Length: 91
Image 1 (cartoon, one colour):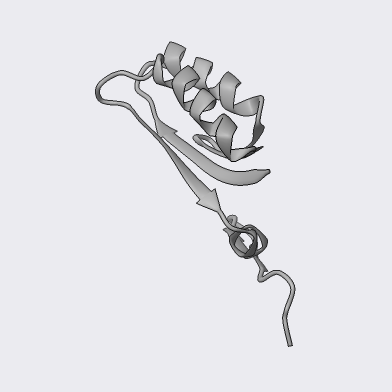
Image 2 (tube, rainbow, N blue to C red):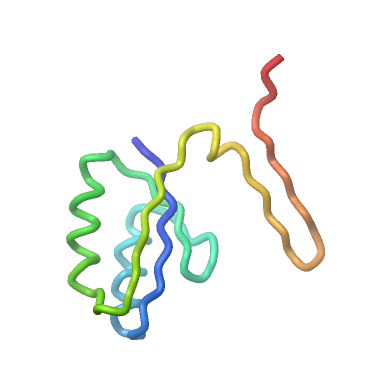
């Protein structure tokens, strides 16, 4: 299994909703238009094809492969809190 960060900029509400539903089948929303998804690398092509039919010329959908170190190293800022997870430390 591989982990990806998927993010989009889709102008049509209808198309955006369809892409959201596709991405939610494979992962979870972490921000309004950003998802962490998990699937075998060979299945990414199917997800891309499925989503592509809902993209217009001005739209964008990107997938970033997250290595295991990247997934464990996260930083999150909210209005009241700054969370940092540097993952396991190797000594």
